[in-house]
Image (cartoon, rainbow, N blue to C red; front, side):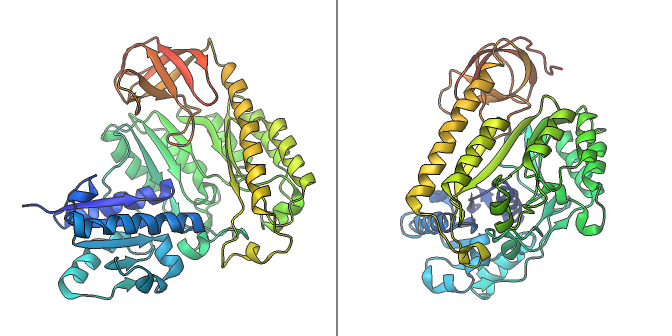
Length: 450
């Protein structure tokens, strides 16, 4: 009887791609992948270690999965990824329930390492300097719907922000080649994928580690020729890398959607300088003005951080004004977390926890009103929608997304009239706006709208 394996993916979309690689490695060993951990003889948890809260989530998941050694079919429990890379050998005694720990450099060799461990009892923990880079030849088992996918174009980060552990956990920026990414996207399009979401720790750094500053533009131009591919989306773009060449390429593309995900983190130069985010040179409002001049219909997503050491009430009010002035379409807000190993953890003038949370709540309330107002302006318009399928909470409504809504992180479009197949892009009329979501009726049941 074929043994089953479960892969639990925690953290970001980049981790999800790695989890898809792990699942493919397990099928190579003859396992059947299951979503039911209670049925699995092998459970793999791909962990996040970016923040202490993420580490605690990973520990909780591992302890929950360990129950299946007694209550289910689990014989081996494996922890992989950023948490392991961050804490290393300390985890062996802290989590005796885990049989094998692997860092962030073993995704493509996971099958061999696991097999050696099971057969020969290799070391309980394996760590190396981060050096793994995914490529088109590495098999993945998709965990996203059949009509869209994430494509990781680079690994690691060289930006060295003072609050971030990613360079330590994932190493410096390492890019794939344009040809390799194009080959993967061609394969995905042939399998029915109509939307690809390009991801990396910093997608605008793509190619710069190889001395190719315009590699991202060349990649987008090459994707233009792929038959069947309809939408290309850029996620995780750095404000330092959104230059005029990129904006021109996006404006001239028929497939790159008018959407930019730019984590500004803050707007006050002194705070940005302390974050090691080029506070003296970065002028967020000027950048946004340039973007909107080139891409008038662009949707902007950002991430902001409140409570960074030294942030005063005046700084926070400046941040509020910045948000009002810009009117972001989508926004995430995070309270600063003092992470051991980050330079920001040693900065003076920490902000009280209750103040951080109050500021975060205030920004999210502000964004809620901005989002509703911006969505209200879409009512009555006819726009293309990528149909996702049935709503996760009811079988009576289908759901879709506009080009200006990224999967999993933004709002959606509730389809209240009309029928269409998941993966189709159809025209729809927007009927109603909520805080983050829309309601629409489909106008064209054809396989592909404009």
